Image (cartoon, rainbow, N blue to C red; front, side, top):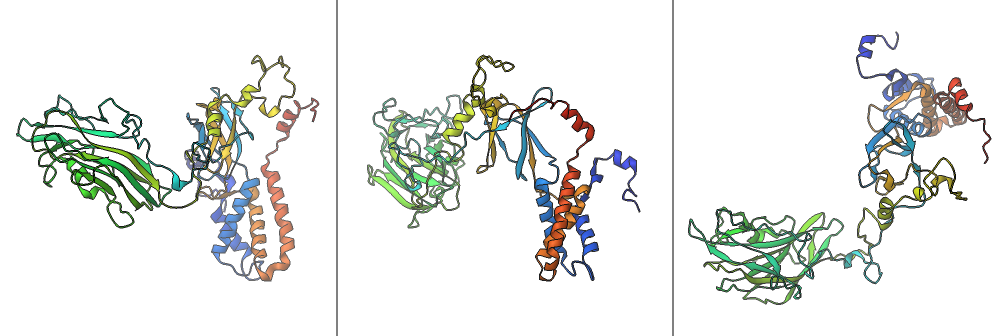
Length: 502
């Protein structure tokens, strides 16, 4: 019975499985191996199918590295980052090229003169800054104006139905930055309908990455200030796994009335501080007029194990009961700090994904262009630059593989080009690619026989013979798969009559 029986020519040519006849599935290889080589009076007396499948997969992987043709390729348009992610089943590359507008491929050569090393974080004196000493909060002392590092709520607009509330967050004196602290400004107004007191609950927050930490310490200096009309000032600084509610609206009843419809009341509830310190206390610091208003307060050992992102939040409000229409400076905060509490002794990096070496390489003029001829003419050596390194005598660009981060990094002149990666896989990524070329099918059987016999005590006398057969079969498979055609070789050699000096 022929192998094509049951498959019509119409089904093949109208289908999408072209050229597949040249391959045999790994499942068929396993079945045929068991049928021919396993059983009574055969080389392998008895073996489980699972063991045969293991050795078949190992043989397929090993032969994929240097015997089978590399048929896997990916193409991308290189993004501004000048990086390409390694394929999911990548083992090694064979060629890296870029394609021009005519579809012609140009080789890109690897460079050995740069890399993307782990950049060690250092302090101003050049000393290594270990993780436990690192500050997580940016501009926590408010020495500069509040910028993009801190996120503040939106402000009410005069066109809204509710009364105008010009709530701003800024340093003392509105334009005075010399005090180096953040002062919240509040006011309250009488509503139109219904006649209630409207005011804001102000907050700022910052997102922190704690994926490499287990415990952190929180500290801040704060002061709660009563409003001009006597409304009690409350200031809280704490850590949460969720950002605050981005709503500044509040009424005189929104603090204590859980049925109010204004979401801003959530920023005053203690439930938002969902982390705990070493004593089991909620993860926030509080200042009120009745308490110690000017002291520096802290919490130690706040547990962030298994958490990637937390938020450091400062909340300020007054429970206004009368209209105090004038915008006034009240509660203020300074020196907000979150540092690692775990003594890990590990080196840290200001940017684990990058380094100054890679940043310079990906943005500066590539070295191969700097080593080009003086006037940009590549046909004639007009510049007579003696000692030119041949590996740099090209303008196609360069690359190197960053195996630590799983990326291929390209030189700056490659940005925006169409890059093609030919690469080697172990052919075990998916069931569909687990197949063997028929030129190498015998090599698979011989490889499996040798591997199985080598692992069994009763077949050790056969190992030397099976090894020779395996080596011969693999060599024969390589010759077959090399796909040498006499006419193509002759055409290539016609251009090789020139003497090449080595």
